[in-house]
Image (cartoon, rainbow, N blue to C red; front, top):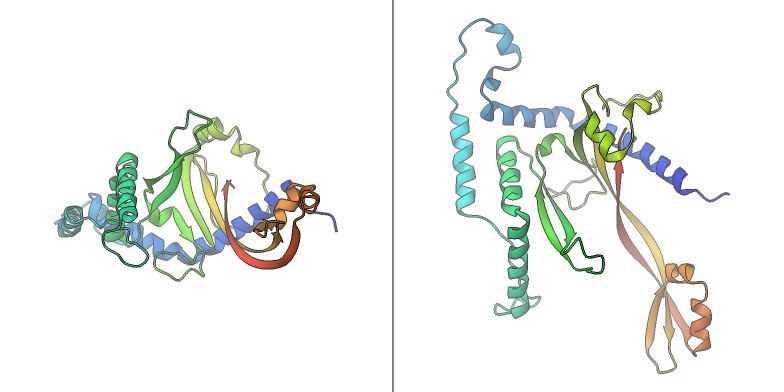
Length: 290
């Protein structure tokens, strides 16, 4: 059987992602729509009369006494006055641990540098108002202009309107979705912005026949998805003993990347003593459109 090419693999992943997202969006559409309606109800003037009530009371005065807005802001302000933060502790629970204190300081410095408060506040307010909030945790280079500086730090970024832009697979049961195998982060872009960034015209996309409910391209906007897949794989670890009695571990991929590695190990007197199969998780990220 011929080995799958990179292009064929990406096409297969793209097709699987479209099918997976359609199932997720179909199952969660009503729930997420209610989250959005709840946020609009308290935060947008006139939204309390949206739907059948607006038609029923057309051309009539429609008063609003928005007490829900006051309640939501009270909860948000209480959170801002008593913020929850990360506290690193030693493995054995020792209180006075210099490494844990250093990690606390580094984490707070990264939070301040990346504007994490905005991400936290936005996620909390959306969760209070609509029931669903999210922010992005990622890594960035300390100096992106220096190609020799490999140092990285973490950064927190807000994800706005998470109830309509963040979707996890339906098998994820934990509240923080730590058990999720798939994740989609949807971003809307204007057609001109999409063309400038990706050099692709949505008008040239093939019009394949499908039954997907989500429309990835409309006359006004184009939706782009960050698609994350958690993939489990089994890898063989080969353990060699050197002439000095030390053990060195190599993965099967090490031998595939360097065909002469095994010959060099044997030439210097190393011998393979055992093999071990281990399970590893890898998170692969893809940027996809319709």
